[in-house]
Length: 153
Image (cartoon, rainbow, N blue to C red; front, side):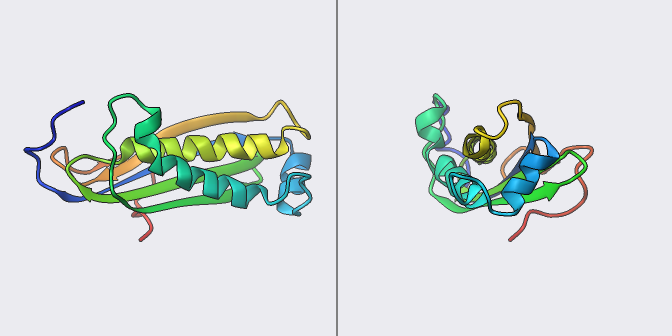
């Protein structure tokens, strides 16, 4: 594990995204609330939040962090068709929360898949990536194609 004891505790934020691509019929089932397993988007949101808090248990050598905020936003995208998921994680600490944001969005995507796999096994999870990070020694990073919006407060 990297020694971060010499670093200043600063506010750090990370935003990650992922997509779940599916047939239009599957998208409609989720949007209409007709999935057999129940509230697909609610379950995916909660799973992502829980995953962010457990990242240090899943990824070797990650520091356990006192996370101050986790949000998972899920938006339908009819052009995919499917959903675009975005996780935002904040901490005031000595190391960043990029892995927590990436873990949150990954698990939220997997949960969405699990909730409707009986309808469509051929769904694709894709595009998981870091969109933005703020704070810390390395400063601000924003993916080149990420719009100029700031992480949600």
